[in-house]
Length: 222
Image (cartoon, rainbow, N blue to C red; front, side, top):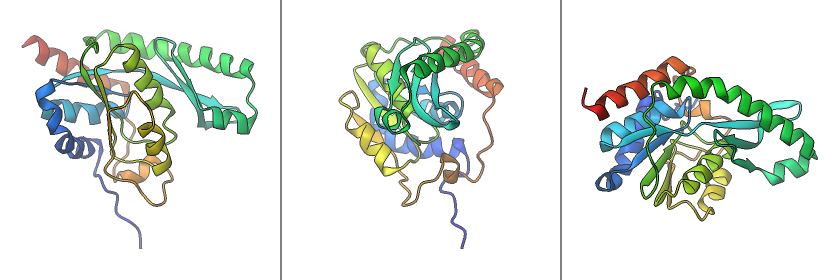
């Protein structure tokens, strides 16, 4: 018998997470989405909590000969998280990592220029920051975003994801920078983030830009 996905779509997942995060509403948090799929999730949380919305762009560092496997991630500011276990097991050379970092930063520039035209950058200093994505896999991108928020002097960092594997959740829970991780669905057998959704169609840059533009207008009272 085919199992039923726990969420209809990313909007549904965001609403479910918002119900678990309402306790943070009095702290006037900043909800940070990870583009692209995490932004619709983050937007639902931000609406429910009447919170600011922003993004942290982090690019997956791809394993040699297997671009779907992450060996780490790099943020828009050049901060790098490396999964040392995967790197050791694949015998990845430092020269490859440096080359991949450069390639991913270059690929992120166009995306960043698009988002910067519409986004109002929110300072994270001294704020409660909720980092949201549409799910966890290896956790590399999320960990990189956590490090970026910590470097921006966030007061608290809460990770909010609809679901993910238990080992990745435990990895993030062990991070000293994280106050709490909210992850309602932890499948016994985790294969991919897509298994969490009935509708997992790709989020496009236009949708991300539209969401950011909407929150800009709301913030400016337009």
